Amino acid sequence: CNTINEEITNICPLKDYEYILVGTTLGKIYMLATPPVPFRFAKVFEFSNFDPEAPLSAVYIQDMIWAEEKNCLFIADEKCYIKRLDLSPIMKEIIEHKKNKANKSDDSNNLRGHLNPPVIPNIQPKILWAIKAHAEAVKSIEYVDIEELIFSTGLDKKVKVWSAKNGDYIDSLQQKYDKAEPTAVAYKKSGTVGILGPDVNTRVDKEYTKLTQEERDEIVREVKAALEREKQKAEEESQ
Image (cartoon, rainbow, N blue to C red; front, side, top):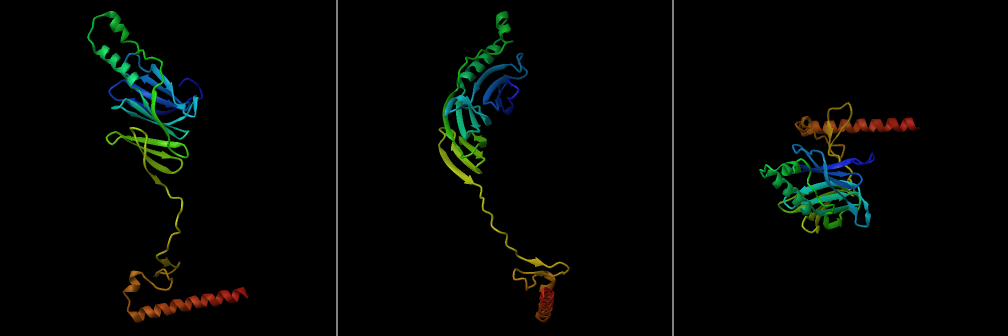
C-alpha cells in the first residue's frame, strides 16, 4: 500500500497468470506481479473504485471477485454499490507480454525486456454496470460463473441475487427480526422425578404412563394436595 492509512481488504489471484489484484480501504485496486516472474511484487497497474455519485471520490472496497472467463472484476463497496468493470484492455497487455516471454529468442534486447513488467496504459477500466444493491453497506459478494449470477450480502440483513450480465435484480432473502416466544412442551419441578405436560397438571413422563389409571389418579390427587398446601402456606405468610 502507498500510504500509512491504507490497508488491504481483498486479494484476487489471476489464474494462469503471475499477478494478483489487491483492493484497499482507500478504494484503490493494484495489480501486482508474483513469483516466479523476475519483477515479482512490482506494481504493474492501478486504478480507483470511484463513487458514481461523486466521481472524484474513491470508495472503500468491501469485497472483490475476479471472473477470469470474462476478464472482468466485480467490486462491492461501503457505499452499497456493486460494479462490474471490464479489464479486457489490461489483460490484453498481460497476455501479449506473456506470449513475448514464451517466444524463444536470442535477441538480448528481447530477453532484457522480459526482466521488466509489462507497460500498461494508464487508463480507468470501463464500468459495465453499477447498482446500489443494499440499503446499508455491502458485506460480501459471490460470483457463479455458469449461471452468471451475483449473490450479495449486506448489513441490512438481506441476501440478494443479481444478473452478472447486466446487474438486473432477480431475488432476495430477508433475515427475520421478529422472534416468537418459545412454547413449553413439558415442565419438571425441582426435586421431583415427574415430567408435567403443558397444563402443568398432567404427567407425561414414561414412568408415569406405565401406571394404571387408579395409580395415576392417586398421584394427581397428591400433587393437587401439595399445591393446595403451598398455596395456603403462602396466604398465611402474606397475612
